[in-house]
Amino acid sequence: MQVDELLKPFPIKEFHPFPRALLGPGAHEMIGPEALKLGFRKTLVMTSGLRGSDIVHKITESLKYHGLEVVVYDKVESNPKDYNVMDAVKLYQENKCDSFVSIGGGSSHDACKGARISLAHDGRNINDFEGFNKSENQKNPPHIAVSTTAGTGSETSWAYVITDTTTDPDNPHKYVAFDDASVATLAVDDPVLYYDCPVDYTAQCGFDVLAHASEPYVARLNFEPSMGNALYATKLVAEHLRTAAWNPQDLSGRQGMMYAQYIAAQAFNSGGLGIIHSISHAVSAFYDTHHGLNNAIALPRVWAFNLPVAYRRYADLAEMMGVDTSGMTVVQAADAAVAAAIRLLRDVGIPERFTDIRQDTYSKNRLGQGPTKFYQRASVIKGDDGDIDRVTHHVLGDACTPGNAKECTFETVRPVVDHCFNGDLDDLIS
Image (cartoon, rainbow, N blue to C red; front, side, top):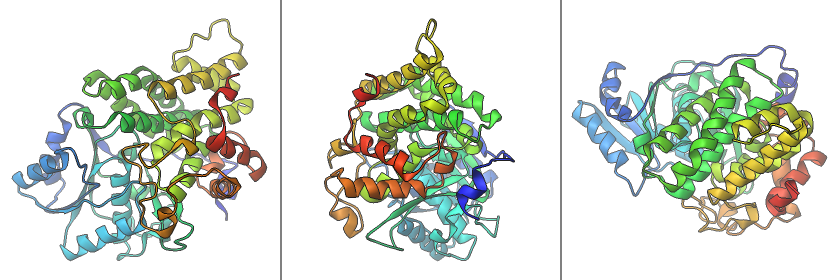
């Protein structure tokens, strides 16, 4: 049965579990004692390295202080690649580790989840597990996920995202795997660890949170237990993202975004996503640009695309975004939500089109520096017909697309993708 055939009717809705979590300033100091309580003895730390900060060093030294042996894999890339996962699996096996600690954002957590799934199946290639609950063995190594960004929410969700670079190196494919067996054992969210995030990284990860909050609120899944979290996470982003981005050591801003991330992830964990994420996955696959940046560019366009089938829901989002909707019709309020999203994007300095992205646009961008010939020749995003068609086809095959509020076909989605590459945001609010 195809994914869209399985999901479109949504007759039975499933609530997916969350891990236990420690949240708040100083929570990272509990990692060593918690690891001991969970039976860790020799742990593999998975991270991108977080160069420019001492976070990885502090946490690994704390683990050692508490008597654990530590092996470090610090080569996780943005949009984690299949080879990142398999290299970590090999290192884990060679060192006879018994547990994982991932430190970073979604890339570190997702690669770690993939490694755990692979290890539970004797080191099978992670690309075999694309899709929904493909695990045949539900038991895999325990995992503490330590977040250093407010964005992905991967530390508390059942999803992980991997880029397949090996099946067809000239056409890399970024996919979402949803698997209850991938859920971390313990999530640790400490806003103090976010202080070192640069402005652009903070801003664009924040739009990942806004996408996680808004998409389940309007998704055709219409999962009632997710609605309150979706609305409140939207409100937190509107209230705290500007401060977190421009005053990075303001605890209230960082803590507000920490809770926004955590709550938004709980909303989409069972409430579904849509084509903000599908477009983001496609552009990441072909250009190795950052997920949060892609979400930010796609979000106002997708909100505008979905308005006709969800005016009331977008009117609610406008209120959460701080718009005074008194005296407005529902349609006017929904339009105001799009305008508020564009204002937030501009206030935190995010590029407005994919064709605005260059190698130096973003501190985490790997445009033109990736591992395959495709990435190496992609130093500039052209936004031509080939780009638009390629991304649109990828969107239609993405696991998030069936949940989108509005029906998606090549003919309806292609103009949205084209606008993401080449359009003017003012067109959406004129």
